[in-house]
Amino acid sequence: MTHQFTQEGCFTFPKFYDRRVAACPDGGTMIEVGVWTGHSLLYLMDRIAESGKSIAVFAIDLFADDVYDNNGPVSGKQWNEFHLRMSPHWKDLDVIKMDSQRSADLFHDQSVDFCFIDACHRYEAVKADLAAWWPKIKPGGVLAGHDLDYEPVARAVTEMESSLSENAVKDHAENVYQIEKLRGIT
Image 1 (cartoon, one colour):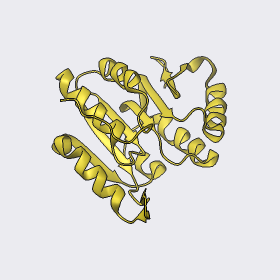
Image 2 (cartoon, one colour):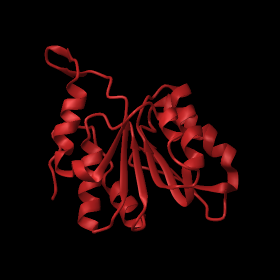
Image 3 (tube, rainbow, N blue to C red):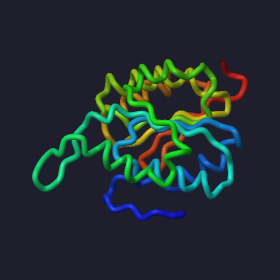
Image 4 (cartoon, rainbow, N blue to C red):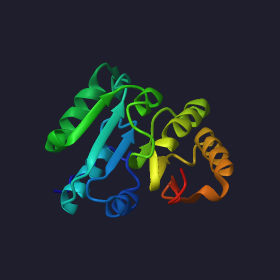
């Protein structure tokens, strides 16, 4: 089941998600932090369904931001759009309405195969998100995120990557950063 995306520019990394689904083991765990109205998450869920794999997927967002239309902000519209968009996969999705750092505490260290961060883009928030989620990534798993072309995101990612040295493989493509935790690294 392939869906069309109507919000221009909001989802620009389908090949990246294709590779992550292919790499995720059956029985794995994937997380998207900062789902907004679900464009990229819908694509991810479609690819997982097509793969035939049983992958636990968690969508994490505060769902507190208003969506803007031609008349200005529309309160509550983010959640409504997300819920409607995700309806084909609702039974296969775990939604957590919570901020990124607090939600990381719900997961055991080294229990997540893939975590994609696209939440608050302020430098301090990105830095805190990376610090909160990196321990949750399994060896061989990937911590990734969007908007590497945005200076506060790039600065936080660069700082984290330089602190990891040989503990991770780093790659940047499609305006996405990805940091793979090497196997054997705890």
